[in-house]
Amino acid sequence: MEIQKNIWYVTLLLTMIAGYCDTVTFVAADSIFSAHVTGNFIVFAYQIIKGSDVHAWVKLLTFPVFILAVIVGGRIALKNINHYRILFWEGVILVLSGIAVYVFGFLEIYSGWTIYVIAMATVFAMGLQNAFGKLYAKETHGPTTMMTGNVTQASLDLGNLLKNGIKDAETILSFKKQVVTIMGFLTGCFLGAIAGMFFGLGTLILPGIAIIICYFYHREN
Image (cartoon, rainbow, N blue to C red; front, side):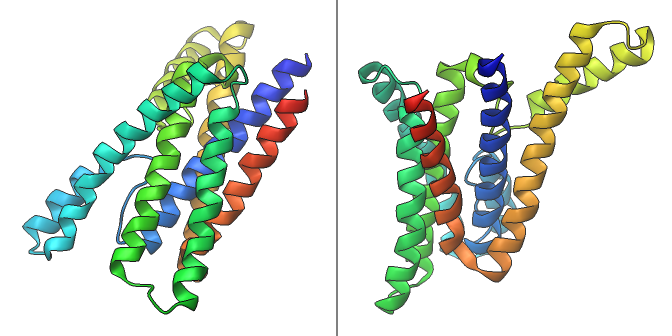
C-alpha cells in the first residue's frame, strides 16, 4: 500500500515539475518549450514565417540536447541501483540553472544568450525526467512530461465509463490516474506561468529542490 501511495505522490510531483519548467521557459526564455521539445519545431516554423531574427534557429538545438539527456539518463541508470538517481541529477541541474540566473545578473552578463544556455540546461533536465519515465514506467502512473497519451487514455476510460457505468473498478482507477497526471501538469503550468512572468528563470531553483528532496526520501525508503 505504501508503494502505491508513493507512486501517486511521485506522479503528481513530476507532472507538476514538467508543467512548471515547460511554462517557465516558454514565458521567460523566448518561447522555448523545455519538456515538449517537439513543440519548438512549431514555434521555430512560425517565427521563421513571421520574419524573426537568427535567434529562432536556437529552438532547433533543444532536440539534440534532449536526445543527449536521454542517452545520459540511460547511462546513469546502468550505473546506479537506485532508480531515483536520475531525478537527483535533474534536480541538481534545475537548482544550478536557477542559481546561474542570479549569478549572471550579479555579473551583469545576463543577456539573450545566457537565457538560452539556461533554457537548454532545463531541456536537459526534462530529458532526464523523460528517460526516468521510460526506463521505470512502473514508478509513475504514466508519462509525466507529455500529456497527449494521458489525455487519450483518459478519454478512452471516460468513454467506457459512459457506456458501462461505474461498475468497472479497473477503468475507474485508470481514469483517476490519468486525471491526477493531467491536473498535476496543468497546475504546474499555471504556477510556471506566474513564476516566469513575475520572477523569471531564477524560480527553477524551486522544482530543483523539490525533486532533490524526492530523491533523498526514496533513497532512505
